[in-house]
Length: 117
Image (cartoon, rainbow, N blue to C red; front, side, top):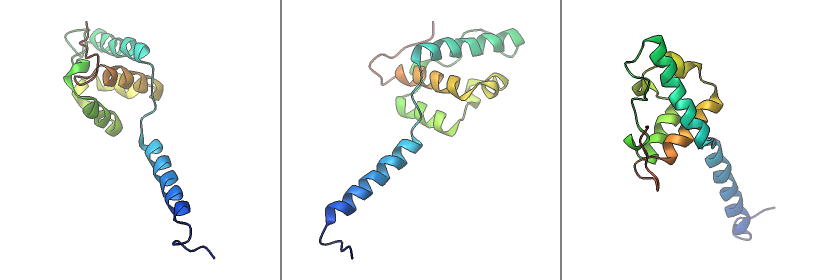
């Protein structure tokens, strides 16, 4: 019979693996930053053409939030602040991941903060 005090490394190794799998299940999959920038602009262009916004330029720049804030927004899928709800609802998950990679990668606390131009 297995006794914890005889082989504690097995217990800790199992615990480590459990946390590893739980952490990877919660994390957002990485996307393509370059494609995300293009897709993010495309969403607002379509929204502008529909007449829902006054400018084809995205209303929120990547440096408007920290990386942690972008992670929270995309984890909760809270895209209300972006406007253009119809366009965001129609985006495939891959495009959402790409936009996340772009915004997160250029957040205010990232090594390369950026504004949409």
